[in-house]
Length: 81
Ligand code: FES
Ligand code: FES
Image (cartoon, rainbow, N blue to C red; front, side, top):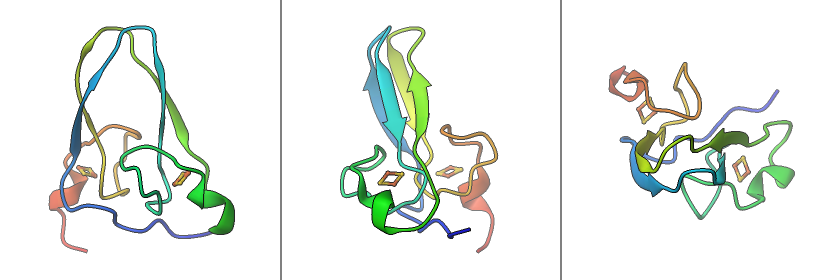
């Protein structure tokens, strides 16, 4: 089991489009945060998490990769590491 990298200390606010699928980077190694760019393939067994936008809205995707509700920020980034 590999460990995610903390990509950001705060969430990423992204405007999503209704009906579109997004792949959230769970490993923290993507250069296209908060989304997967395939970098996890060299980083062990972590895989991206699919997010389907049910409505067009601004969504806070987790950047610290420690959320308990992936791929969304649940405030866990405020906990000391
Ligand atoms: Fe990860 Fe908020 S940025 S829980
Ligand atoms: Fe992080 Fe794909 S690059 S999950």
